[in-house]
Image 1 (cartoon, helix red, strand yellow):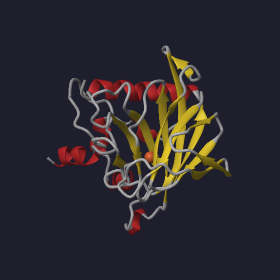
Image 2: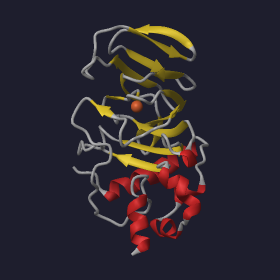
Image 3: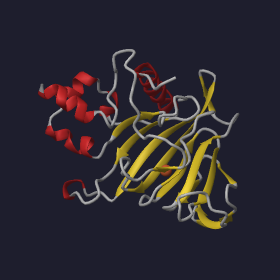
Image 4: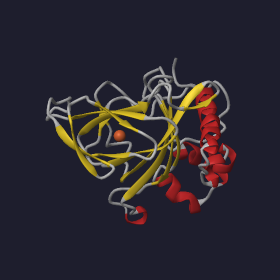
Length: 240
Ligand SMILES: [Fe+2]
């Protein structure tokens, strides 16, 4: 099924509940309605330019339960933009059992993946070859500051509190280990954090399959939130 507005609304409601259960608080604009975003002036330019806030996507999979993400970007910069010159980014990511992002790598972004709360995270990684495909090379990774050699595709398990550095051109995919997450409505949740260099989601995601970072949304009910790639649409509405 295509990504619908009702799935987005529900995913954010659920994310707020899960984060609250883990004692994680988000900034006030995490709760803003589309009407409030329409009232927001230039004091919110950094939020819009750096694409802070909610991000719910199925990557065009039409299978959100299995290939999808609900996350919140807390801070970010824009490469080459003086006014938004932060060199770092931070995200908080929901990892419900059974759901993962598609395998991908970044040409520029280096990210630390941190298991913040809940169950275990499983991470699968490969070095990208010159064609951007999975290579057969072994390689070193830093797990909690300690060097470990991993085989291509070897699963790395991160317990809560552990973290792993994912260097550019490393194909990666991670998910909550089944049966280990914190139960909300019968689904086990893990929450991961990402601390990284600047995140440019329009240009720096290289998927191995035919995927799309911000797919079209089927409007089956009124939006209750505005996603990080929808700010220009809301700005156009308030200008009209
Ligand atoms: Fe990534």
